[in-house]
Length: 397
Image (cartoon, rainbow, N blue to C red):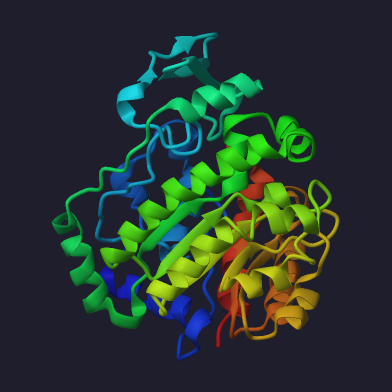
């Protein structure tokens, strides 16, 4: 765990990237799947994370990198963290049965969860390999129009935690003042759709079955709004992280679908957040072609976004993105994952320097598009070290 003094320095860096103000340098996001607030010596991670080369980079992350808000140093009940949130439309837990994992091979396991509805069971299953930080969906709950009826037939109610369980966080936020990094995360509505059915089916039904899509989307908004409103009443904030809206990015969806599926849903929650908590900061995680979306983000009240990918993964350079949003948005970016795997350390240093120069030091967070989900190659490890060193070198204010 970072000493509180280090956490305060990280807080100052991050808040300076939003509010302006004094800080020693721009924030640096970890290039690996290791939190700067962790302690690799104390936690002693297993498998490949215990190898000396990983431990070396993890220690550099702990020393030099900054956490990604929301970062709840003081915990509170997470009303969104449940298996049913974006797989079963937030169905109550008594309808959900998580079955024992099935071993498929020496390293692969199949995990199955069943939603028992009044109209029949719906199943979600995924495979997970030991030592790999990702999973592969095999069966999704909705595969027909009848499955939508089954999903919506489950009676849903929100039973909020006791308000006093949030008191330690409220005290922390008051004490931290303008340097509080706490908050909550929301999985976007279109990500919820893709969680319940295949992406191909979502894209087909957006055009062929709009009534089914709207029924699911409206249920998501009603249920998610109730939870967001409750959290706002408990003083949760200032950070709100929205994840998964890239499913609506061009070329998979266009401006018409954005107006139908994003603005009235994610946008409605963002309006609620800004109305109830004017000090709130809304962040959107969105891969892909965001060039045309950045003005829409601004109109929705978004304060920051990541990872602002350049072509060919994205459609806009970091410099052009900064020109487009000016000083109205904090940009996280824009070191590509594939560059970290393919480039030399000298090339990575040049890319880090260019990202900082193009984004500017006032409203930029140095950010890689993704960390590896399995054992790091020697090249990636060398590039991760140079990425951190270059961020410290060129990010100084």
